[in-house]
Amino acid sequence: MLKIYLTKDGKLETIDKPQKGCWINLVHPTEKELLEIEEKYHIEPDDLRAALDEEEASRFTKEDDYTLVLVDIPSIEEKNGKNRFTTIPMGVIVAKEAIITVCLENTPVLRFNDKTSKNINTGMKTRMLLQILLEDAKLFLKYLRQINKESEQLEEKLKRSIENPVLLEMMELGRSLLYFTTSIKGNNAVLEKLNKVSAITRYEEDEDLFEDVMIESKQAGEMADTYSGVINGMMDAYSSIISNNMNVIQKFIAIAAVVISIPSMVFDAYGMNIEGVPFENSPMAFPIIVILALFASFLVYQYFSRKRMF
Image 1 (cartoon, rainbow, N blue to C red):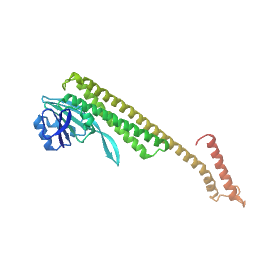
Image 2: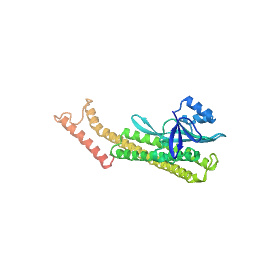
Image 3: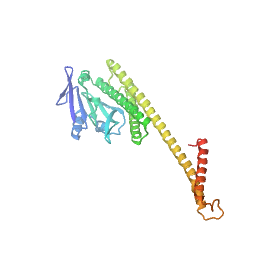
Image 4: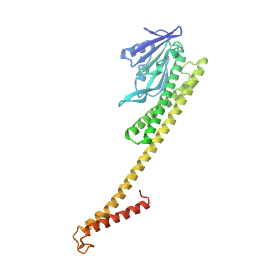
């Protein structure tokens, strides 16, 4: 899908054909749409298609006719009937006559509402690039807060009962945080390079905006590291609890086996038809033997109990 926008009289409007100073948004584009943009703005095919590869790492490329800034953005995908957080690449190409965005899906990063679109000027390509990067960082922060809220809810469930589905959900959140942490680090590396290298034209009035982008992105990285550490700590703690519970159960089973084996040993001895065993001629032999066997088991039970073996 290809859509073209242009700022007219302070408003972001949709137009039919590319014009100077427009914004071209490619969402899961067709081959025809890609070829059209490649030829018109002299963009290398690999650079225009970079954002369509889910494994592509964050980077920027400076060419004669354009600059490519490739970053990761947060995304939500459905898995087993539940929403899961992940990341996908998004390319922003600052050409001489237009700014071009490429992504596999219609991301909230590029959905400017009535309020935010008032600050968008497609003709000011550097500022728009920074505004997109700022929206990316803000979306990371929003999703990180959602992940933290979900982890707190799962923690409350685990306090009541340690169940496999809850642990699996916690693992999924940990995986999402790992994706976020890796992607944000890559984005921060790109921002650092943009700050040091003159890959795009920097204007004095945009310095505050660039600083906001750096602050928000670094904050997102710190939050991702913190939340990831919290979830990993909880998983380790519950893993230790489960392991300890297994040890207690195994110890109980071993002690129960010892206690139960005593009557069995006595009955086995009397079942071997050996002469001269106690009470063999007594009419009360059976109840006496049963009582003695149970009493011996009770003594063993008392011994383990005093030793606090269970």
